[in-house]
Structure formats: structure tokens, C-alpha cells
Image 1 (cartoon, helix red, strand yellow):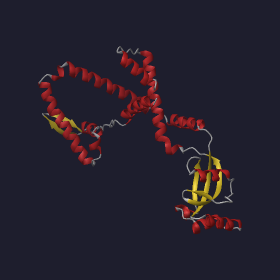
Image 2: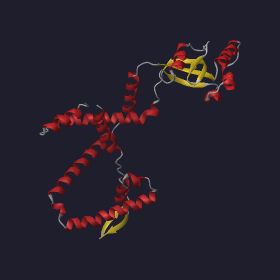
Image 3: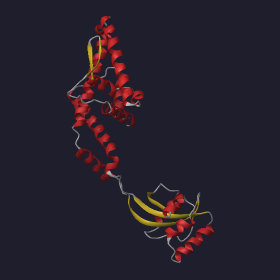
Image 4: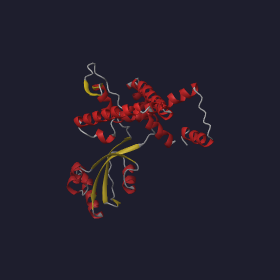
Length: 280
């Protein structure tokens, strides 16, 4: 499953991140090679598809790198044409493959551009609805070195002392400045001894006996308990959009296979392809 999803993701990403610049109406000439004009649109295309090492450069340097690439291509391609390389079978096969690949990418871009925001939100809602209910607690703690110190803190709490003030005064944890606040957490996030004690408490309760862990002795208070909250849509919208595009890509391929029969003659390749597409 992982391998197939990786390839699908790679195929989608190749389309999403392959830049297709919008061409301005005033497509100025920026250079000429042997009388052939190089336009701003040519430069924009070359800049958008520079290799990763060039993408890190400032814009002006990228422009120069892209222009240099275009000039080199045009200079050498003329020599290749003069040598008749465009007529070779290898060249024609490669050009046929490149054309089909670009048509593949163009079709996917067209389909992805039609993706509506409400489709992404609906997919997010579906994921949230399918999430299993999981309890989380909002807790504070006071961490000290010895059991006696922890017992003394519990006595002070029993006498009415404020937990937050005691945490700021006594705790040796980095959370002391926040009154020992650890925020909300689910099971599996804390060390076992701490987690067991925290989840056993009710809202507003604190531990009546010190809790020992590898870090020292804790006094724990639970401020709140609730079902774990899903991440906000705005936080995960890019990841959800990617999931929707992956699913759309898979659907496009499945639909295309209904119209066109795929037959792999080589037995080993056939077996491998079948395993890959089934996600094995």
C-alpha cells in the first residue's frame, strides 16, 4: 500500500509543483539567437522549471541562469538538427514519450484547477467524523526532587494554597513560569506513571499522594477533561488538499483503464505492476 501511495503522491506532486507561468499580453523579446527571438514567456517557463539548486538563487540570478540555459539549448539544438538527429528513431520515441507526459500533466493540472474549496472541506469533515473518540486532559504539575517536598506541597494545597502560585514558587520544571501548565494531552504523550495519575483524576482534582517518575516527584492537578479536538481545518488544509488530489488522480487512472485495456506481456512486470497498483 505504501509504495503505491508514494508513487501516486509523486505523480501528483510532479504536476502540482511543475510551474506553468501565466504569460503577459506584452511578451517582450529579451534576447535573440541566430535571429530567433527569445521572449519573456520563454524565460518565465525556463525559470519556473530550473533544477532545485537554481531555485534557491535570487530572482535576478535565476533569470540569468534560465537565459543561459535557453541560449545553450538553442545553440546546440541547431547543431543537432543540422546533424539530422531529429530524424532518428530514438529521438522520435523520446519526443513521443515527452509529449504524452506533458499531456498527462496538462490534463491533471486542468482537473486539479477545477478542485473546489468545498470538496477539500468535505474531505476534512469526513476524516474528522471517522476519528475515534479519545480523551485528553488539561493538567498542571509541580515537579520537585524529593517525596517529602511533594508531600509538603500537597499539605499546602489542602490548606487552601493556590496551585499556580505554588508551581511558580516550588516547581523545578520549565513549565513553572506558566504555573506548571502542560496544556491538553492524550494518552501516550507522558511517562506512564504521570499519565496514569493524571487520567485517574477528575476535573479540579489534584493528586493526594506524590507521583514518582524518572524526572522526580510530581504533584498533578487536572484542570479539564474532554474529547480530543481535531486539528483546525486551516492548519491542515494543504495536507487535505493533497489527499483529495491523490484520490482524484487514482480515480482518473481507474476511469481511464475502463476505456483502455492495459495488457502487460512480460510475466514478471505484470506481476509487479499488479502488486504495485493493489498497494501490496
